[in-house]
Image 1: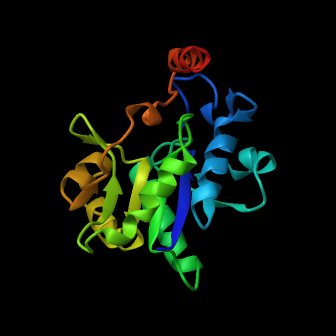
Image 2: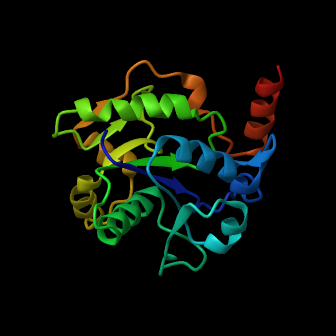
Image 3: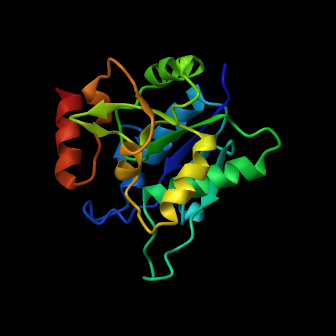
Length: 208
């Protein structure tokens, strides 16, 4: 089985939610706890990518590592977004380990319906992908789901070349690359909670 690490992106300001959505309770866990638990079940290592490791470290198992994002030099208190977080993650993982993972599972921290069984099934399909594919991602309504899927660590070079042009859209980068779509996806798994109304809708669906 191909080696796989998970990186969980928790660097957003949660401005639409009005509070840190990673710490919102979903049942007996917070979103960040749930996402880490699911990722630990189906990968070889889990890292939270965030500017605030001290905020999350007390609530997470010691087996979860942290990759610290640097703030944007242009505006205090802001960060570079998911494309740069992914680049930072791939750079750290490739440099830190003697035997770096072949693939990284990138996950947003605000998806309460994630399934370890589904992610494990997708992981088992990685060995069958042709080498030209840099990522294995779900696609919905002609748009990739960039933060619930897999990237080769070797995609780092292409990501850095793109970022060096000043562009920051991960979706635009994906549209320029050879990406394999994950078949037969369940739309419900990609529900996220960006706003209080999203959270209320998810709770209503869960309780129904």
